[in-house]
Length: 291
Image (cartoon, rainbow, N blue to C red; front, side, top):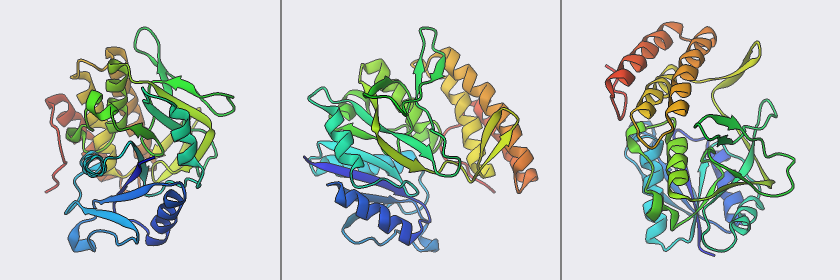
């Protein structure tokens, strides 16, 4: 098989990145690192046995993923996997996911993602007939399960899917990039399956806190800006179920307030939250430019 793995990095820990690359090599993948680290902060990560794409600064996860996809397709990749720099797959993850794709049409296969701090599954989601997304935990199932929404890290995509669905939406910069792309897969009839036997640890957010019955992944104020702004951008997209988009706006507003309680810089969190709200209503896209 011609399998390529795309890792998007931003100020990566060299030792952790090296372990990730070794695991992907052991799983049979050729590795492409799309590095968003600014050049004045050290530039692209140097990793043996990888193709390094220096993005020349932080261009966002979507642009970096797209650069990796184009490079993989130029090498005639049949399957393309995606990883964040803090993902921790084992050597059997990729072979298991590729095997689960079976014969064409291949679609997308993803592992069960476990939050490394809480030990809980970060569940995929399924839409009901009205466009409401419900958690669809796959841990403990005996066979691959059809889902509609997954996070990109750990997933394997058949190369032909990008011809059907297109690349990642760079206007989002970060947040909702993978989910919006999954919704395009759903519209195009591309199957997405979670493979219960493939399990991967993953870290989401800077920390995890409990707010009564709610679990909150706390992000930096800048990252929180993108989640709030991009939730409003979903409402403007005709292919996104309206009920889902409106729910994400409400969830993003609540999530931002809960994050503010635990933020190390409440003033900046509030300021960027307001800007995310205004920019979302105005339809602002692309990278946030701070004065």
